[in-house]
Amino acid sequence: MTRIVVVGDLMTDTVAHAALPLARGSDTPSTVTMHGGGSGANIAAWLAVDGAEVAFVGRRGADIAGRNRDMELMGYGVDARLVMDPERPTGTCVVMVTHKGDHTMLSDPGANAALSPDDLPKDLFVPGSHLHLSGYTLLNEGSRPAAVAAIDRARQADMTISVDGASAAPLERLGAEPFFDLTNGATLLLVNDAQAAVLTGRDDPGQAIRVLTAWYPQVVVKLGPGGAMFANGREPVRVPSQPLEKFVDGTGGGDAFCAGFLPSWLAKKPPTEALASGCRLAARALALVGARPAL
Image 1 (cartoon, one colour):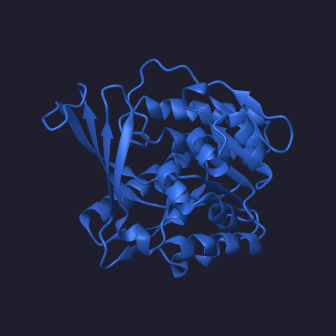
Image 2 (cartoon, helix red, strand yellow):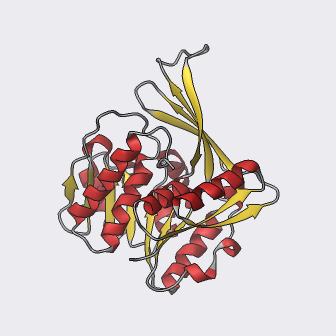
Image 3 (cartoon, one colour):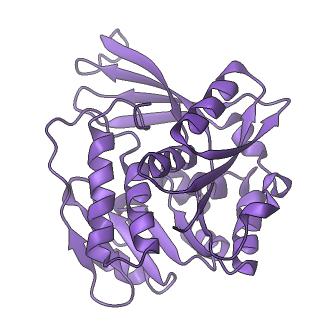
């Protein structure tokens, strides 16, 4: 089994799940809960509970939240390599979920923004391992040098490399060409349809994935309820999403998909099998409140 090294963000998510349509300027009955979060840490947690060997590299504050997030990752079975920041708090995200399950996020990266190349453990960047880089680490200006260093070290160690697109809005602020330049050397790009549109200017995912294969050897585009597609220079293949008994919360569905897809892809399973594995784990995440598997 290939060890997967995830370099990325660690957050505490405060999830407010509205019971009714939002009453602007007034009160809306909601259920408010606290969860571990951060796209990179979420992917590491889902990988671990699904049986993969995974290490997570990130940064946390010297606070109770950071200690709790650290212990949670270890509880999932993740080899957590977290550097404690003496000045910045653990990152925090307020997730507002509508009564229909749609979500909007307000993020404060906290200690994540101070991740540096010196925080990358040398013993994890070795031949035979795989690097997955969270797009948030790349898009945040403070942690970008660490992201670039991680890609460089993985290339020097002849590791395979995957990168995700994080979120459409910050991706658009950075711009497509800088993103392509920064991720040069990645073997696999994972994006959703909105991120694919930002990077290519194509609203049609089928057209967008063909454009992206000019930059990356292999590309996955997540289509939400429409499933997911994969391309590697040949005709794209697509699988449907898994049926859901009840949709609860979309937070973390894309992270779980990545965690389901990567081990099958690294094992050189057929693309349709790897996509189906991603959709399987995404369906589990969509049936839960929060972005992590239940401990």
